[in-house]
Length: 160
Image (cartoon, rainbow, N blue to C red):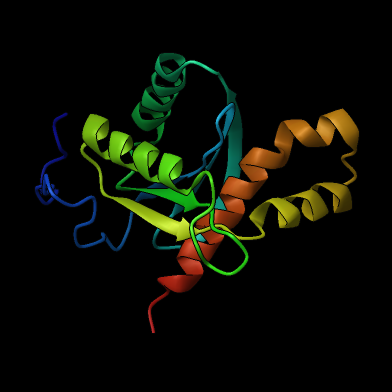
């Protein structure tokens, strides 16, 4: 992929370079079946859920992600890293890392991994508090979890 003018080259051995100070950020709550997506602005530190990509096939999933990247023109991607309660790897940890590497490889953007422990539980509470129940809540849980992942990233990377 080509990079935007002025964007630093991306290392082939790392998925992290110096982070930009402003620009859109897309965040992903990775799941084997669904991927929640949220967007935010580095300079503002505010996140919004966008959608849940419900595609079992990798190509369909990446086609939708490509369209979102084309629409939002992010300067950075964030992927939630599922970990066990004690901070050790979870069954999905390596799959999320692989997803992050694939994002970097396909789109040439910096990708950051963010601990996502408890975001699904928080997303369920947020959906319930907003009046969503059952099937309607399930449609929005993954994108709400992506929003919480992105908010966590912004909190961790706020200027001192």
